[in-house]
Length: 499
Ligand code: FCB
Image (cartoon, rainbow, N blue to C red; front, top):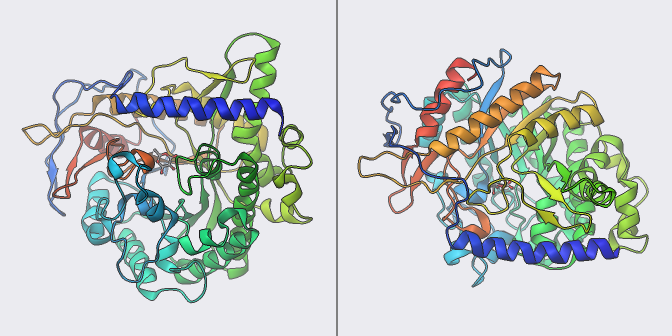
């Protein structure tokens, strides 16, 4: 691995440690609570009162999205389900990690989370109440195969069947992610994503799911944010499995992508009609200044952040600059076998884009901040980045259908004495990002739907329950759900199909 890469990775590890510290100190950046507004309690499946008018009139003028545009929200299994030991669920790497002292804020775990496993029917009613047309959720692999292989657990399959049926009953299209980081611990014990066999096991698990739900799920997403597993899980070590081993990290990147390709092939082989694609967190990268050094460093940075995951799937080759930077003797380069890239680039039907933040790169390969950050210290608030990344994907990779599967903001949400949650900053954030997406569509981007992260407040990985990302507030001691002001606002966006 080149000097630049090694230095960059070390600096970033240090920067992220600082970021965690800053977040702990409660620095909310530009996110400030606004004026009192309306939101209402949703007790189970009760209906909610009408939203009071809010101050979020669109400064973007009336914007209408194409007819049939999908409006959704996203969640993931470990972050909301709870019921960690029920109905034959096995352990995942996130159970192990979160139960290891010092790994998550306040020692929080996903044992109970938002208790969605038991409350899914009421949560489905909330989705209907908001008017969602699409719901993106993930399937917990260890609920289906406790040890990551072999005969599926019928009770696990039944849960997702109930969920999917419940979505159809309410006119909401299911979008299922096969892997959102909760690898069965038994597979981790056998080497995890460093072990090529894990990709094969994933292909088999995907096949199980296609057989079980293929007739009811129109869109499948394979791996959620492989890059986050690579960086957070294997370079910085603050996500499961908590490793700090850059050489292993990029081999993991390859195996995750191989797993993606095997799942795509399994869907085609199953004869099911559903569409499938990867879910990638893409970061528009910009030079921090006008120097040629910053331009060059940004180019390589973009390779690690974006092209490593896009070129492989959509062009059938890893980017040459990244491979050269890793070096021919790297574990990753040595781990790529003949035919792997053909599997990885098996034609997909759509690309799921997750956008949260831009990255600014100096000539030394460091990152700097240019915009206010959110409670998640890594997130700079820059709506224009949404436009840039969507148009860039279309420009560089052709007119593959796109869906935004994550975009959102953590806010210091508080349940007020009158029972409301005022998250004006989230409304501003979403409105500006929706407008950027609208502009991208107008400029020719085939974007078909948009999923806000997240439907519910949930277990935000190493940050535990402190960061609240939901449209719906979860009062964890009671598990009561309260629509935040942004949820009421989002309902009007959906109703009007625009701003
Ligand atoms: C994304 C993850 C999602 C959530 C949001 C805030 O990277 O996919 O689970 O943690 O960030």
